[in-house]
Image (tube, rainbow, N blue to C red; front, side, top):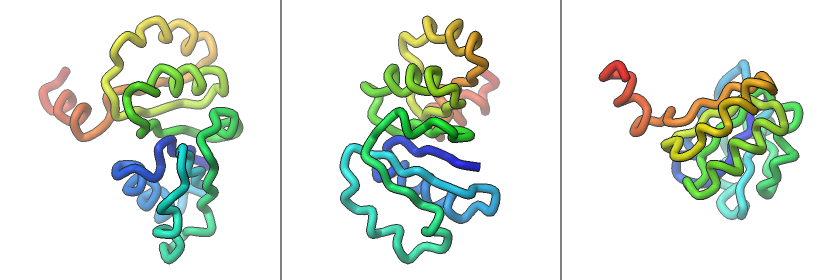
Length: 130
């Protein structure tokens, strides 16, 4: 699987990239971020050959099996719209404020969008059965 991590050099992003690099099912990890400072911290990790850093570019999601949105919330609508356009399923840790209008376009494209999938928000909603 090829996974794109949007915001891959933030705190959550680094943790996600490390987990993905360790996964034998993942063949490529695209670490997309506005700045690539700190990328050298991955150099010594097992699986680092699977890592491909790119400046944030929604077009790079083409051909991905899934994308993880760990960008600041102000970029969430653009990330979701890019996922629909690229026909790539997307998981986000952010709350889905005002994104209901993207449900129909996502369904038409056959794209799964999963907001609120972090530890908080996310796991707390699962625990309470919401």
